[in-house]
Length: 152
Image (tube, rainbow, N blue to C red; front, side, top):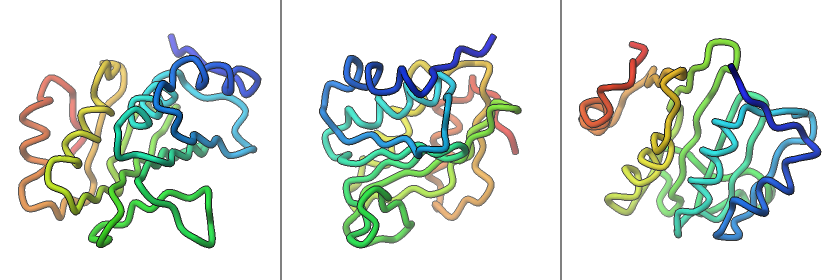
């Protein structure tokens, strides 16, 4: 059974669980979130290079930088020269996450972000990578986390 956190509980939940003090924003139209998505956000926020996390009703984005003209939007663009970030798309109806964008100009940080997503990852949720331009990164991740039932 899916456990949800409602909007009134967000701030209290983030304050007690987010030890890094990273800014976590939830878009105002979101009234409740599955605990799995909230916990993923907190684990990403705890990475020392992540400064911004944003949760929408179908996306979770985390990055070391945000857009200067859009201060609550983390930069996750692939091939960005300086930003380290990740964006996943999620479906609560189907319990899926899709790794949509990931970028790390510093070797190893991409793996750390994926590890943060998969730490305590619920077996009820399925991961996917719809478009793979990684030259082998996702093949290694799928092998490492092969117990998870990947959507192909």
